[in-house]
Each structure stands twice: as C-alpha cells, then as structure tokens.
Image 1 (cartoon, helix red, strand yellow):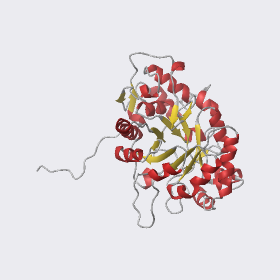
Image 2 (cartoon, rainbow, N blue to C red; image 1 turned 30 degrees about the horizontal axis):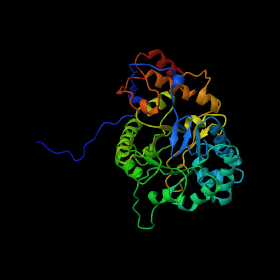
Image 3 (tube, rainbow, N blue to C red; image 1 turned 30 degrees about the vertical axis):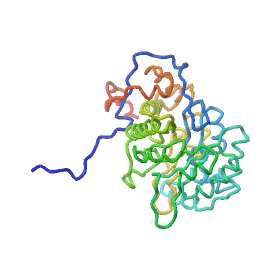
Image 4 (cartoon, rainbow, N blue to C red; image 1 turned 120 degrees about the vertical axis):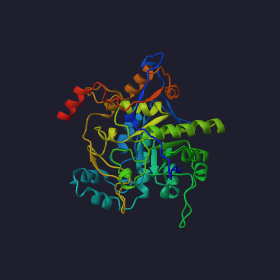
Length: 382
C-alpha cells in the first residue's frame, strides 16, 4: 500500500564526509588574501577564539590580537565574577572528573561584578588589541552599555540556539533590530544552523552570524537535547542565506563557523563550504597561553539545571603562535593553521576567501582512510 511518509529525512554531512577538489590552476600560498571584515573592522586572519573561560582571558586576547586574530572574552564567566580568576581556574583544572560539574555550577553561581567588566575590557584595549566580548541574550540589554562604555569593539550575543524571534510569556525578549541601533559597534549573533534562521537574523541588521549547534569538543548538546546539524551542511545552508540576503539587500554579513574543527583540514573545508571565518575552542585550549591549563569546557557546562557540556583534558601542545603560524613538528594538522589554509587556497586556485567559497566540495567519506592502513594501524597501537 502506498503511503506518504510522516517525515522526510535529508542526508547531512560533517567535515569527515567531504573533501576539496584541487583547482585547474594553483597559486602561491603567500599570495592569498585571507582578510576578515566584520562591519568596518578588518583582521589579517579569519580566526576567532571561542568565548570560553578555558580558552580566553585578558592575556590570551592580547596575544591573539597581536597575531592578527580576534579572541572573544566571555563577560559572564570567571573573569567578571572573581577579582583573581587564576586561582579559580586552577581549582577547575585540578578537580576530579566526578566532581567538576558540581564545582563549575558552584563557581558560576557567584554574581558578576560590573566593575570587573570594565577592568577586563580596558586591560585588553590598553595593550592595543581589539576587544570582542560575549553575552547571553538574557544579559545583553543590561551589560552591553557597560561594555561599550569601557571600549569594547565587537559585541557577540551567543546562546546554544538563537533565532530572530523568541516567544516567551514572561518577558519581552532581546530584539536584535533594536540592539544594532543602540550599540555603536558591530554585533555578531549565534548560534544557528538553518537557512531560514540565518536569513532572518541577517535581516535584523547584525554584522556576523555564528554557525554551529553542538559540534564543539566540550559540548554535549547533541547528546542531551538531540539537537544539531553536521557542520558542513549547516555552513552551506547558512552561506546560501548570506548570498541570497546579499543579493536582496546589498549588505554582506559574515558567516563564522563555530565548533567542530579539529585541525587545519577542517578549517579549510569550513571556508570552502562558505564560511568567512572560523571560531576555535579546543585547538586554542591546547596552547600555553590559554588560561584553562590544558582543560576545556563550554559556556553551558555550569548550567544549574541542565548542563550541556563537560570539562575535557586536551593537554598543552605548544604556543599560540605555533598553532597559528608554525613552525610545527606535529603531523596531525593542529598547528600552523594559517599555513594550511593558505596552502589549500593555493591548491584550489583561490586568491581570497570569496574565491575559496567557489572551490569544489565532494562527498568523500573515505577521504581520511583510503590508502591509510599503516597510519590507522599505528593509531590503534597507540
């Protein structure tokens, strides 16, 4: 008997499912332009550091800025709850796995201090670096004026899933079209994974969209809520929304892939799928400059009722400069990320990020295993 399915499923793809096809011409890597523009601001490399307490503090933000990238400081984390955040970070790093979630919940129950918000931002600005800060929608109305007054350059409004319209009986939600008129700095909003949500967010006048729900190494949203879309598909869908919105409005909004990238290859694939930049967490948590002491946890990990993250030990592999620019003796692609991107662009014949968006992407689930029997065997032996 013929019947109409109750639901139709479509195939979606992550980074391990796809590969980039070399171009018909090649370009010297050092002749590629990888500049990122957000609003009127420009950055030499299209790389952001995630607004996570184990990744970004004032010192890391300054170091990232000096290397041409942008680190986002979590204004609702330990940096604004404690005058001496280093001692708190040490407790988190040394806590046994069975106790860490409860400890995080206790630590993050400490109220935020308005004076520390200004202090942290001013310290980054004093060092000559751009300052990007992250807030949740619930606190944006109250805290964004304080951040702007202190000198913040970019406001990131971030939650697990963000839409242009939020329905609530108890309060009037944050209206992004009003926010962009109230704050005189670029506004980035996230996270989303679908064409419709991305397009509607862009219509509010924001300057950037974060793409990714649940792919982060320390995030358990996909396990706890069952929500998420593999990153390759999510980026392509949101990049399609960006292109359609650009044609309709003449205004270009940056798409930033957030989460799920473990190495240079994943970053190259994210850009080829349509991202203008990438936001990295666990890779930077492995640097000597990161405040997490080789540990990484997500913004939703300390949630008092439904934690959607876990602290993971990632270790320390090298410096921030090594991670971004090398030199490296590692063969796993976790260092010299900028070199990997420039090389891939050269191989694909892309002179800039926009041209890299046109690189051919194929479905290739065997890309990492084909002909690699010895590497796989040695990996299992370890």
